[in-house]
Length: 216
Image (cartoon, rainbow, N blue to C red; front, side, top):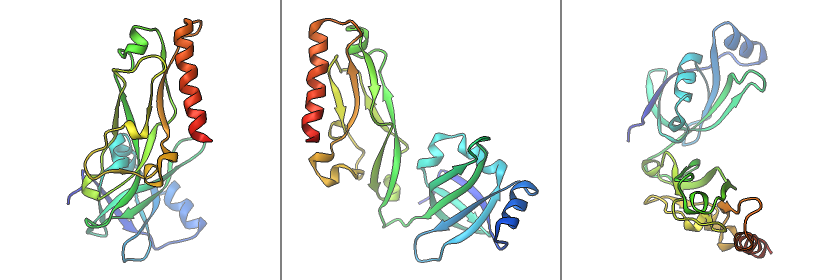
C-alpha cells in the first residue's frame, strides 16, 4: 500500500509556545501531530514549502500520504489542517496513522458535473444549488476515493439528489446513511427560474414539501 504523496518530517523535541514561535518564524517550519494505531501521538515538524506545495493539490487531503518521519516511512491521512485566520498560512496539521486492514472515516469532496448542460438549466432555465459540498465516508485505506462525482445531466426543475442517489465506489459507505433513512441528506437540487411558470414553481414546492416531510 503506497501513498500518492510523500512528506518529510522530524520528531519535535522542543515543546512550548516559545519553541513553537521560533520554529514557525525563524525556521519556517509547520507543526503537526501524528496519532492513531498502536504508537503514542508524536509531535512533528516539517518544511513549510513542502506542505504548501502539496496542499495546492486537492487530492492531497483525501489520499494516503507516505510520511518519512526521522527516516522511517509510515502511512497517514490528513485529519485536520489549521490555517492562520488572516494570512491563510498553514499553522498545524493532524495526521492519522492508517492500517491496511482497518477502516478509516474521512470527509471527501463532491465533484458536480454537467451542471450547465443539465435539462433543468439548459432547457428550463433553472439553477443548481448545493446543500452539501462533501460527504463523510468510511472505507479501507486502499478504497479511499479522491472525490465523489455527482452527475446532474438528467435533472429537471424540481429534481434533487440525495445521498441515497449517489453511486459510491466499491468498498465505500456513507456514514450518514449507516444511521438509517432519516439521515438521507439532500445533496443538490435544480431550482425553478425566478418568475418561472406555475408548473416549474409547483415542482420546486413539491420538492421542498418532500424535504420537510422527511425531517418530521
